[in-house]
Length: 262
Image 1 (cartoon, rainbow, N blue to C red):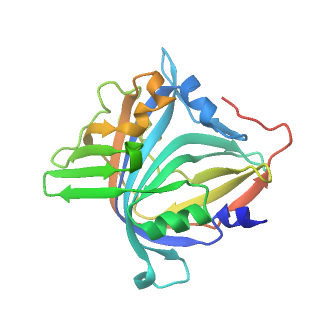
Image 2: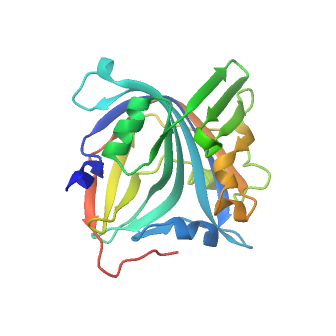
């Protein structure tokens, strides 16, 4: 009866990121807004012409993930892909918190798929991963059942661009960096109690580098509602060798009239 309480991220979790690659896409607000649950609003950026919201594909090579009290050698090593919206939440204390809302998560390790789905709202799925890296290039190829979230891309490791991608709504890297992650919080919605579950992330030595990416395939973005428009590649940042920790989830009940805020 109360199994939904397990999805509140009940343990403090520690891990180590060999690398984290985040690629963000800009969309018109009206495309992404219907995906939000009650209580959350889109985190946006405005230009002279338009206001944009952002979806990020995060690809993370994780080592030694385990509940915080356990030693590192008992942790799990796996690869994670996550599709996330940049959002904001107005807390009961009156603070506006920036964070992420997870649309889909994938893992190449079945244990993580099972446990991630049991202990969070992150909708984990199984993937097959092909990874290749040398001094010049990082290539990632991800295959999913029914090709719902297949992904093929390469990163040029020989250069560090000094400006955002060509059609990005950002004019400089400092602004683009605000929509690159990680964010202080990850939010999910608990329909059984009409509540927001907040998980705070804490990291060390997070100094991401702007990278050039070539995306050959991203089938998740070919589905509705994302296929209503051509997404704009907004930024791509990569960081290596980062200790990371997630706090236990905390729950705040929404008022009865709380709804989406676009």
